[in-house]
Length: 233
Image (tube, rainbow, N blue to C red):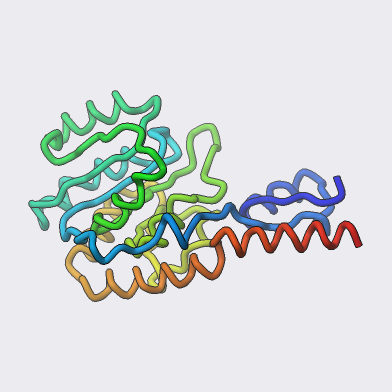
């Protein structure tokens, strides 16, 4: 190939480690419709006690750690609900975990949600939480598009600390990053943001600015166009 694109700096390192010439590897993330679809909507009231996860129910998403964090969160904020939007092979296991933790009345499993319905979930949620981990197989997030979608809707984000998310998030500037695989760290961050509406608002505003500059489809298309022009020249 004359050129190769990857979606994050972490993926570039992986590809270069496979003896690919670094000079032909470009980092171009996936894009999101941040002008027509994943946008803030002042007409949708944002709740003060709704946590949202969006993604497949698989090990690398870390939803089991989010459920484990919930009892500590509920002690401080007893009205909180957790919405899980997505399906996958771990669904039954996660439902059993919720039951064992006495969370059945506090966790809603929505199943697969259509892309067009996701913005309303992000616009309504108090926080979007993506507790990413490295799976036992070594599998992990290569980018984390859901974070961009949430930030586009001005929903404050908490994410597990993996290399790929640093292309999107700057800790305490536009989102919070927590230790990956730590239910306690996750609970502490959730409690902190639930108790600090000003911090939530600041992170949400900065998050929207960040993703529009870097991940809007017009920006991404322009990057591909530059590569094509360069190769043709």
